[in-house]
Length: 110
Image (tube, rainbow, N blue to C red):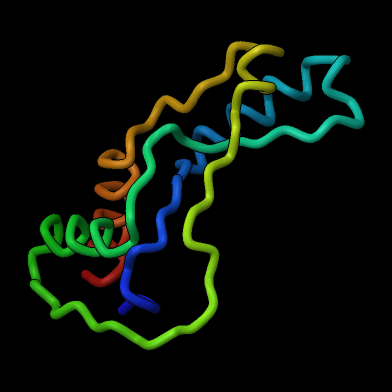
């Protein structure tokens, strides 16, 4: 189930990438009192993400669209600041993230 027409795009980041970013930042004195975006370079429309999740799942649920009038159409965090400070960049692809979530839910429902 997703809201709107699924054209909203997002960039997802695996929690392991976020933890690694926070660890690297905590070791950088210049990072104190600074703001850093942590994200991914892979942008995907929500409808496409729903189709990928459906593809990876053994059960094939129907996609349900829920009307929604207001949403940010596109979110694109810039990770150049954290990359310049400590060389951080995401290590997990969107496919890795999606498969990880699907596997987690499969294991939880066994």
